[in-house]
Image 1 (cartoon, rainbow, N blue to C red):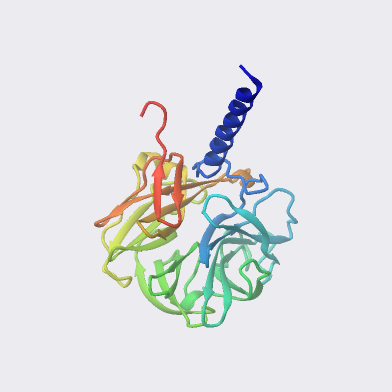
Image 2: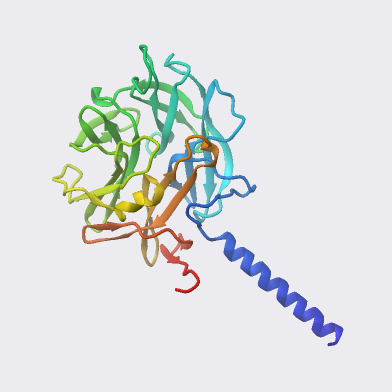
Length: 338
């Protein structure tokens, strides 16, 4: 073999390896460690995503090791393709804002962009043992604002939406741009509430579902609203369930399993249903957290495209998959032997 042919073969091999590495890099692998562009496991637990221009921003609970225990942190990542995420820093770093107590928590941060005010508005679940005792007694939402998607966010206040207890929260932005807060109210049920014009308050309770559901998520798909949530089992996974309605005000259908119940939603808990509408298709992504309470920094994510339509919402078995955010198309990769 002459040197020229050897060089051609070497270049071809390098090209194949580079192409394979690039393809692997653009694959979402549910349940596995998900590295950011610096190679660190993404820390955006209980999070939510917004899209501004061509960039997606993913906010969540920052759980990396070595954090100052006096503070709570909300991380921010950005991506053009929903696969490769760049850490943009901690969008919020905050001490106990309301004298809740040493074990206070900040959970499930969600960010909305208000086009009228130009402000980014963050909602978060604030809780702790305020007033004595232990457990989640405070049950309020906190609100913070920023002029930029990456922060820093400035804390404004906390309150109980419309006077109700609020624990796990979710976000929903309808196709017409109207913003809603989803929150779990232990004594009464599961609220879907419209935000005020400036997003700094909760204006109207659209619906109260008398169901013990948290981790709420909503998507509007082909004329139907799908609401999804998990049972009240703390860190432990359970069979997440969904219901449908033609209006956010209901009436809502009976709740049904989103996955085989024996899998307990494949060990995950819902946090968001993300709709990616492209030029050719629309993909709806189940975003779930796989909690590890004793090693929270190692908690994983379960993202999968769902099967949706005609009142059915189904989470298939987690497998590696790809998505094209421009076309809205996704492809689930086949495993060996399939």
